[in-house]
Image 1 (cartoon, rainbow over the protein chains, first blue to last red):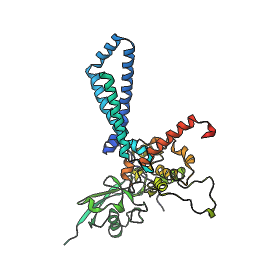
Image 2 (cartoon, rainbow over the protein chains, first blue to last red):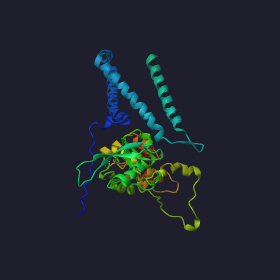
Image 3 (tube, rainbow over the protein chains, first blue to last red):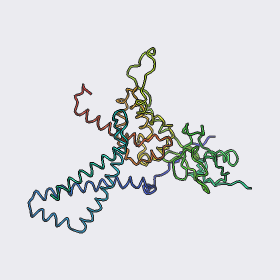
Image 4 (cartoon, chains in turn red, orange):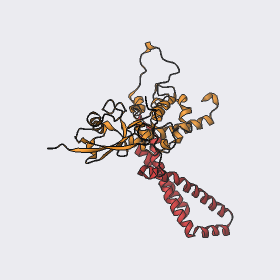
Length: 130
Length: 248
């Protein structure tokens, strides 16, 4: 008599994402989307406050000065940096360009992204400090 | 002088005996030219003939002997026992697949998914045989060659947490193989592959963990293939939106 095949399916543990560094970074990157969304909301609140006049803008600045808002924004910034860096890591995998018959090296594509990031940041700094 | 030995902790699953896998330890000679697979064959030949595992070529080509060695997806023929000295070496079946017996997993899911991406040259019209071969420049070949190195060992599925959580995911190797043909200048099947690749279970299910490319013993870089196709799919979608139907 042959045994009935009864394949064993290994259950996925609830903490599977702490088992490996790459899994952990992956989980953190997924989580980072929440903070990206928060920064969008924060920016919209800022724009709305500016639109509503000086008093509203001042109220927004006071509210932004609360310790918990500063802390939330600081944590959000860290997650945003993780998001950006991992996104830039993906870019050279997705973008395959050929120039004069040769493939543009992934490092050049990466560098172009970082360069653009620096330039845009410099522009924002210039706008703010002008 | 007594020969150096190393302990192999091997996962056993005998459905008629156990409801879940158990570990059995064996002492095997630690020889510098011995791969993990040689250790398993030593067990099978000299210690315990009931141990079941798949293998064939012993040279990293057939893709049969993929297992989890000390937690990592590996081809056991290309992983040396000495790398794990003084041991123990833990050998388990590939993750994310149902275990049939001991180290043997059911690969039916992958085998069913593979043909859905049409991993062969698709032509709308074949050229007459008298015209000879379809010629290709070295550059055209370079476009897809890396993806053609896939040996269907499924280590990438074993490494992929997305596949673990969503078994409907088409998966790294199948998508890389789809790209192997999409990027081949002789192929005309990119449109036929599109529906499967752009479905919810296709490239968009991938969240770029990157472990598939780490696990790949042939440097296929399935993660890269998937991200590249995401860009292709997004570009196609934009063109479809902008262009009138006739011009696509």
